[in-house]
Length: 290
Image 1: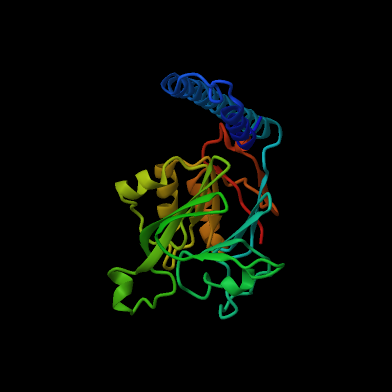
Image 2: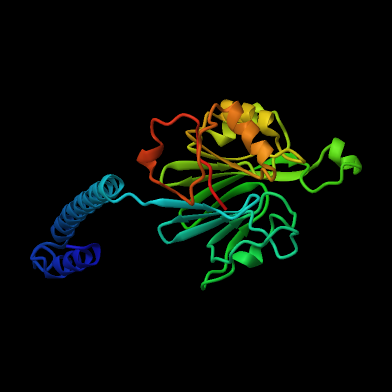
């Protein structure tokens, strides 16, 4: 019996109650009516509590069943520089899509629900490139906390020097704003460092990032972390899976793989992963082909 039906039943009981319609003394009738009302309301509250408990138990069992028997698969593909497409069920995320104004080859167009931009540069701010297939992305570009379509995102402030002229005073001083993103999907923490140029993450930033399942790590130098700096960051964050990016020259990639003791890693077209796939892994490097 749902809540509405239960309410109607109680109302009917009030109207049809022999206590209420009794011709006995008025005071006695009122007292009995109040007792009967309290009895009905007490039973109703018990019913509501029982229904809510059953609903909560059912929801918990369903979530555990889906988590165990029908977990969602995450598919990650690389489109050059720092552009990644992550598909998770019906949700598509785009990280740092390359714009048409970039001097690099523009990646294939695809539709995204969310576009996360780490640095405001043509190589990384092409939100128009992921407005496709009936999807218009919600754009996140900067620090803050966000919740969109059951995706929980933290944007953390950091600094980088990507795209800055080395003669620019800001290059040696403060650099430019870079946003690190921590994205929670199906109990997996995906950390995208963007065009990070700082070799030392603050303790506060490290705590905000938390336990990392998949780390997207720039390694190419020239305004972002170089191979040695990137390796140190990886050791500090202790991710289960590392995906290198923004390496331009293959020498940077070779140096990074050597730093990580992963010289034998071969590129793959895409990474297909579930939560259980990352458990037990420690700093595994996955090299995605463009």
